Image (cartoon, rainbow, N blue to C red; front, top):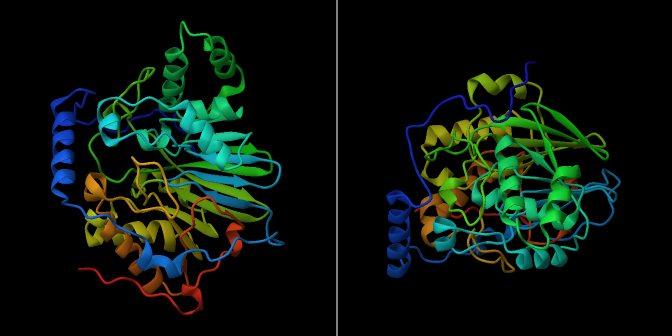
Length: 380
């Protein structure tokens, strides 16, 4: 199997969206318009309560691997010795800040790590480099002493964050972290050993959005707007440990034909499935997505991720995306589709939502729905 550099761009896009473009301004005006008019009522997860994991698991004889869901696609995976965090998006800037220029909040990141009981991490791995995945990744790596692992786009985010501190007292500390063990570049299809974990970086697509094939080509120094955070390449992570496998998918994109070779033997016990945006895709697209990521992977447990608010600090219980971004992602419909596709059309597959901040044995999760109390909300 031939490997390709992660900053490879297969297709050029005709979009030219700068940080202060008219497009960005139009988004902001539209967002304020929708929010002001109350066009998108707040959503809750109450209809899906039976599908939430009901109890923190105790020590597992199946696997020592435990998972803590920290909102969006922030997933802490650990085995008692090694701790891996995907994304690490904790600043949660306002929508206005995200559009016109956001800067990682060191204090919010410090607080979020402390609340999650994280003092040290082994690795931080963003699934791709949109703002809601990679904004905080370098600072999370720095504060936790972790290695940042990913693409050339991610390297440019990290270099921009180090450059942000030039002329400041702490610059040398950031430079020392980054130039030491702070960053590791990976190739598409590469398997990386992290403690007792094997992590494979699988190529997948982003759900169709403008600029989805673009990369970050030079150091990105904050403050920077969301349109400067280009996502490519987009990874799915296959995490293996003690004979068990977790597949983490951060965006509801399709596997391109030229990438199917990387997926030929990939299966997983549990799939953490990104669902934002599937509510506005066609029925054929939805069918393709669940076939590629659920059926073809022979998964028995599906855990939806990327469904909660992106631009507000998380509160227990988490709230689904609403307001302007919920309007864009069609989150109400995305949740309904996910429940229908898994709980109703795949009765041998369990649908499980993870509560925020709970330390769980990922391979032994159960829900009230699995005991016969589940019922998917009807689409209207």
